Image 1 (cartoon, helix red, strand yellow):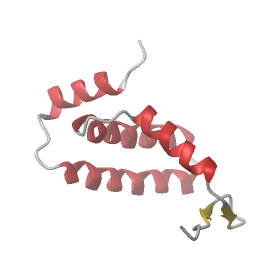
Image 2 (cartoon, rainbow, N blue to C red; image 1 turned 120 degrees about the vertical axis):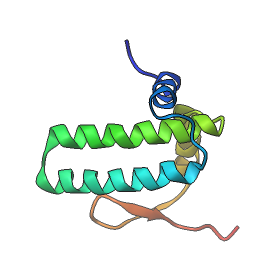
Image 3 (cartoon, one colour; image 1 turned 180 degrees about the vertical axis):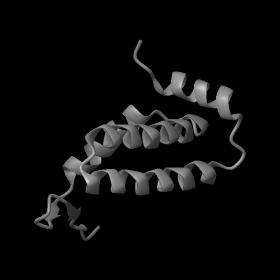
Image 4 (cartoon, rainbow, N blue to C red; image 1 turned 90 degrees about the horizontal axis):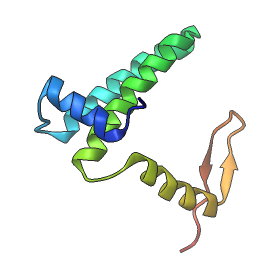
Length: 101
């Protein structure tokens, strides 16, 4: 069975209890990002997968608590991203070029 935002959130609520302060999830995700950075620097692919999943679990919870769906939010953001002009930094990343609006 594939997990969904709802099944992951239900498990987390049952396991850890309700979230009182949504910022706690963001702070925890930031900690997990540090662990992901360490795994990435080490080139530890299994750990990269696990740490990325930890972050996604926290984001699922945050979005579910706010009545949002991650897949839909990504879809919406990609529409916006595709409509923007981008400046590449040369390292595989970039930033959008502001329009004069």
